[in-house]
Every structure is written in C-alpha cells, then in structure tokens.
Image 1 (cartoon, rainbow, N blue to C red):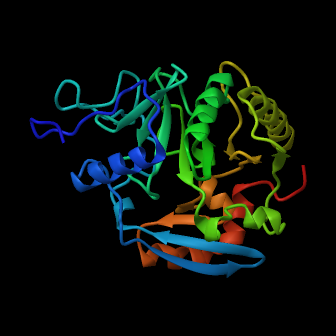
Image 2: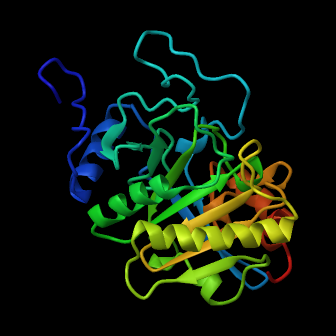
Length: 297
C-alpha cells in the first residue's frame, strides 16, 4: 500500500516476476479492485469422448457476458476505460509489453492470476486478426513467467468475446492437472482445428507464421476472407511455448450457453451449479460441435 492508503501501481516498463504479479493480484483482490473466488470449486465430467472441467466461481456472477454498443462511462476523470475502450482496467495495470500493449489483471478473474494484454490503442477491435505486435507482447509475457501459461484470443462474439477492445488473455496452465491440451492430445474434441507444434520456444515471427496458416484454414472452412474493412472470420487462437491451435467458430454456442477458448479445450467457467446443470443437459460435446466446424480441415 502507498502511504496515502491507495494501491501502488506497478511500474509500466519493468518486467515483474511471476511472484510479484501474483502478489499484486492478491493485493487488489483483497482491496475489492478485482473479483476472484478463492473458494472456487471444480467438478469434472465426461461428455462423449471429452473430459470436462467445470470451474464454479461466484466472482463471475457480475461479469458482463455480452458485447454491447454502449461503452462503459467513467464517473470521474481517470476512473474509466481509455478512449475507445470498453474494458475498464484503471488501477489494474501490471506492465507495458513491447511498447504496444498493456498487461493488466482481469477484473473478473477465473484464475490466479488471470491477465489481459490490451492494445494501447483503445480503438483496436476484437474482430481484427492478430499481428506481429500481438505476438511480440505475448512472447515477452511468456518469457517473464516461470510456470506454463496459456495465451488465447477470442475473435468476435462467435469466438466467445464479451468486450470489443482488442485483447489477448493469459491463464496458468493448471486445468486437467496441468495438461490443458488433454482433449486435443486424445483426439476427443468434436470440432476441426489447425495445430502447430514447436520443438523449441518460438520467436514472435514463428508464432505469427503459425497463426497465419491457421487463419487461412479458418477462412477456407468458413468460406470467409479476412479483410481490412471487416476483419477476420470468427476463431479462437490458443498457444503456449510448445504449440498453437486455431479453431474456426460458427457460433458462440447454443443459446443461452457459449464457449470461449478455454471452453473449446473442455474447461467451462461458470458462476453456479444451475449453470453447470444447463451445460450437462445441453451436452458439452454437442455445444462445442455446434460452435465449431465438425469436419477435418
């Protein structure tokens, strides 16, 4: 805490250690500046071939789940989103990445820590394809972390995004006992995807090359091209130091349920047992098959 009782703000240019990021997360959670359920529960299930992990967190009860045309409005100067943005991360900043992105803590966190990498330009949008600056920021982040993290991008509403300011997310690779890729490795997912494997941790250019190949596969499968005016067709990109998958998306899910990148891997973040039962009644594999493309690329 600063001497005036306000939360200290991490230096924007320094590379914080993972322990320092987690300590800042706990500090802000204790102060009520971000929402995280330390008593969250996990429930595992089987849906056809897929293993499913439900993470039930009361902290998600107030999370905005849908994009809107109305941006959040600050009640006081300096307390709301930056110009063009609909994500309020005021006071949640961790550090600058690549000079183009701000690493911040997620106000509605499903993991400890749960991070966002937002473009410094608040007018960039979540329907744009990823570019070299996005991968430079992601690579810098991964190189700073000790444990394995997943970095992912939810492109468009169909891809599971709830905010339109362009951002990647990062979470610890801890689901399924530290193997978040288990359903990919077991060929258990009911949708098509593009995959690239890396024998050594890639540089940003290698990540971008893999992503562009995946995006071309998305365009072929959806019959839709990426354009400057309209952006990219809906998809998810999920990566760590060893691999990347790109998933074409036809829909967010089966109303009222939808899946983001984590959901496509089998990890469902939800706020109540009632929502878990809705997922079970609908069928996780059925929903993910409807959300993606049920054929090989």
